[in-house]
Structures are given as structure tokens and as C-alpha cells.
Length: 297
Image (cartoon, rainbow, N blue to C red):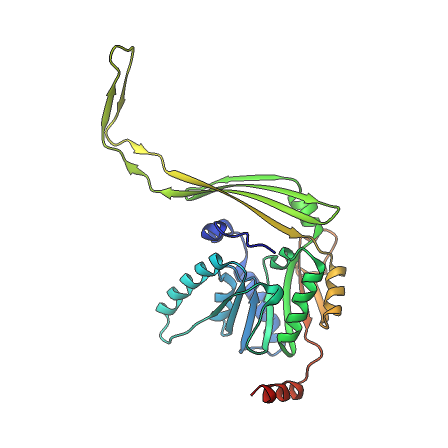
């Protein structure tokens, strides 16, 4: 899983303004509270710029955000400093720059979640199994694992081999999608045009061409068009089926609880684009954990 967010991180939140973060926060919080998890430490895998991390933090949880992109975490840290200045007590979110395939925590946590198809960036099943095993390892006994993933229907039918372009004031982009059905790999070729200079008035000037047939004049108040820098990135994801996810969860020792269509919250269908999954830690007891912690001390 490579780091594909070097420039995208600067404009990620602007381009992803259609993501229902508040809806997802309410959904995750409802699952946690239904299971009796109303406080304590929660970890987010693939936290990006911290949009969800901050929301869960404001909902009363102690948050750890993990992401492979240092640039995305820089944006998250900057946003966190603004939150701290608004709150009376000094509060914090712990952000860790780690690859989720080998992430490390200081102890177990009450729940772990991952949204916005972060797990689809794990393009090898054996690597996703590593992630699931680490999740099971770092969850409290009977702790919850909540995550989403994009389906093959999404890559093959919804976005398909399409090109999307959009022009905005601060950033424009061209989004080319290419899905390989044989290996279930989706390549997203992203071309960004980032605004690097504000519009500025040019001094009034006039250019005369001697011995020519014309003269060029620049009126006072002429506004020079903004400048943009082009950046190209490639984002690689893999499509997974729900059956594959269930098999990997079981192999990792986790217990599959349920799955639902992310949009309708109904049972997933063949036309589901994004699926939410809930799983539970398996294999640890509080007595075993206490013995382990005593040994560590």
C-alpha cells in the first residue's frame, strides 16, 4: 500500500465534501452505545485528515487516529490545534503515522473502526488478513471492529471505466477510473490543478508595435488570471466481496456479527456500492489480559 496522498491531502476535504461524515458518526456511535461502549479509547484506521476522528472525539471518546500519509496527518494536526483553542480544557487526539498492516498500539482499545473505503487500499488478501489479526490483537475482550469497503459493483458498474472532471476556484481535477476485472484491481488516475497564486491586478501598460499594423493596449484594472500547478497521482484499490471479508475475519480470529448496505442500512445486495461490517474480538478474556499486563509491568 503506497502513500498516494502527497498533494491530494491539501485539497482532500474540499473535494470530498459529499462524504456523509455526520451520518457515519451517528451510525458508529449508535453501534458503540448499543454495545455499552459510551466512553474509553477508540482507534480509527486510515483516519486521513481526521474528519471522523474529530467527530468521535467530540462525541466523548478518547481517540487514536492512524494513517500511512504524513501529509494527511499534518492537515489533521492543524485542525486539532484549532479545536484545542476553542475548548477550555487541554484536550488531544493521538495521531500515529503508521501502516495499518503493521500498526502498533500501547495497549488494547474498546473499539476500532475504518471508513471511507480505507481497507480497499489493502490490495492483497494476505495483507488484509494481517490487518484483521492486528485488530483482534489490540481490541479489548469482546471489543468491536466496524468498517466499510467498496464492492466490485461499485468499481465495475458505478464508476466503471469513466472519466470525471470538475472545475472549482481553488482546485480542478480530472478523475480517470480503470478497473481490471481479472485481478479486481481499480486504478484511479487523478490529475490535480492546484491554485498557487491569487488574482492580482496588473499595472496598466500599453505596448505599441512600431511599423506594424496594430497596437496592443492593456486597460487599467486588468486582472491577471490565477496560476495553477498540475500534479498527477495514482490511487490503487482492490474490490472485495462480502464472502471474502467474512472468510478473512474468521481466519483472523474475529467473529462476524452483521453487515449492511451503507446507504440503506438494509441487507447488502449485489448492487450495494459500499458495505458496513461489524465484527467482534475473539480469543481474549479480561483475566488473560490482566495477567499479561502484570507480566509487562
